[in-house]
Every structure is written in C-alpha cells, then in structure tokens.
Amino acid sequence: MSDCLFCKIVEKRIPARILFETEELIAFNDVNPQAPMHALVIPKRHIRSLADVDPEDCTLLGALLIGSQRAAKELGIDESGYRVVANTGADGGQSVFHIHFHVLGGRPLAWPPG
Image (cartoon, rainbow, N blue to C red; front, side):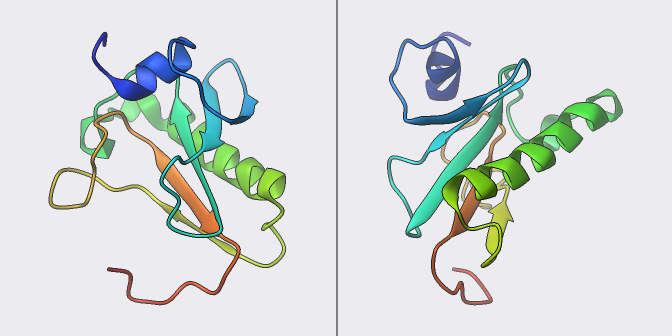
C-alpha cells in the first residue's frame, strides 16, 4: 500500500526507532507514546485491521503476540507487566489502518481504558 504509513516504515522510506525485525514483523517505538514504554508490533504484510484477517493468518497472529512479548522484553517491562492492545476500526480507536499491536507499560495501567 503506497499510502500506508506503516508500509512506508517497513520499506524504510520513513525512519523509526526499531526494536527488532524478523522476516514477518517489525517492532518500533511509538512516536506518540501513551505510556512511558510504548511500542508497536506490525506485520510486514499489509492487513488493514484485525477485522480483515483470515483463518489462514493464524500463524501470523501468533507471531504478532510472540513479537509483543519480545517487545516487552526489549523495553524492559516484561517482569513488571504490560498491556497489549489491538484497536480495530475508527470507533475502536484505530488511526493507522495497518494491523498493529500496541505494547504499553512502564507505569501502572488503569482499567477500564479510555
């Protein structure tokens, strides 16, 4: 997707503070953090949102969760605790329409969110 912000990050056309990268995923620090530690974990393949995944994407979804776990370790919040969020659709708070998981931590997180 030539106009997708996250696709441009995957293609290295837009810089990002990358935590790690695999064949399937890339994880980077959020430019608008909502917690002291806030990373995004995205697939390199463009999928618009969680509502657009297919049963064939189960392996990729598992990789995103394992990637979220790794991002928490990279951020140093794996022991203290963290939250993983996937906003879906405009009413769900999704602002970039490329599936991504937020990994947030570094402070106590309240419930319910927003």
